[in-house]
Amino acid sequence: MMSGATGDGNGTAATIVSRNIPNSKTENRLSLATNGEYARTPYFGGEWHKIRIVLMFRATGAATFNPNFRFGLCNTNSLATSVGSATCTNFIGFSLDSGTYTWTHNAGVVRNWYSQGIGTNMADKRVNTITTHGGGVGSDGRHWGSQEDSRTVWVVEITRPVFATSATSVTYSFTWRSTSTNNAEFSVSKDALIRLLEGDVGNQDIVNITGTDAGAVTGSFSFDESTGAFDTLNIFWGSTPNLELSAIGVRKIY
Picture (tube, rainbow, N blue to C red):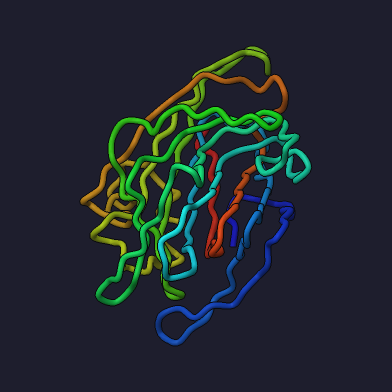
């Protein structure tokens, strides 16, 4: 499920799978295997100055591993020029390098989950060069579901000012929250996607869904669209086990 798009997306090492959820129900999810990628252009394309993106997902498996995870905005939904490509046109977002990051598996009371001990780097990419820009200021949850009936969330806002031309370098400001320790064993309802897309990252619905014991993180860096407009949602997963996405939401605020 993706809210906020009118056209189809493109994927590689991506399949639709059926999974069990609470109350003996099932749902379809987008599963990304090793080096799996997904790119889809929202209805507003690159015409935005503030957007919110919500991912609702879990990582399969039951053992600690090193994720290779990139998520953000690229130029066009062609996987030949997306963040997973060595010929990436343009990308901004986040990068979890498998040499730096560890998702530690934790045994819960009713559901198991992964914890990420360090902050998530903001990043850009052009051609085959990824540049990281630090993990921002603040501390969010960084806890991800692992069991089949789990849904945990990552909520991101990206803001930029009006700019004269695509070659103009401007400040891209990020604010994000993710599932906290207290909420790591909850399975978020899929209709919570709508509430997560409303208001701002600090509104009470988002705080309650992600967990009141975790805050928001903010960060920024300067970049430009000289090699391509940021008009497409882009998710890359280079790890084993798989990443399963229950729902994706994209909203243009202005």
